[in-house]
Amino acid sequence: MYQIENNIILKKFLFLDRIYLFVFFMPAKMTLSVYDDVHNQKAEGIAYDLWRINNSSNRVNIKHDIITNNNNSHVLIQANTVEDLGSFEIVLYVKDYFEHCNPNLDVRDSRFTLPFGMNDLDRDYHLNVHITPTGYTCTL
Image (cartoon, rainbow, N blue to C red; front, side):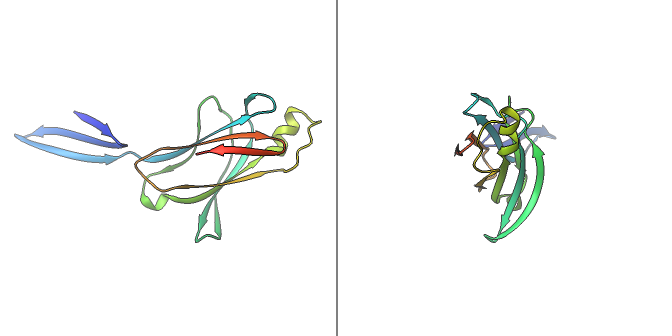
């Protein structure tokens, strides 16, 4: 028998007339979805870099990837321990995406840099980004 509360799995079982309780923490995760407001569609095919920010200035590249299945939220980070939490930046390479959709669009910036943080292991985060050739809006 088990139950899930706040991303914590509590598992109970009876063995030799004693009840044992095991606690397992479910990892926190950050998911991402990107929406193209110009073409009124989910923005698939955008390349990005994910950076960890250490001590407010030292940046460590975690991964380079492409958002391919935007029908579901794209998982950026899965934090299994407190050490996995912290400050991050995602760099979206939007110029290539918009030029692929419409070569006649005037794209002001080649990339958008979005800072964000993860502070709790007991919750999931979702970064929802809306892009245009001239800027972006996002909610966490």
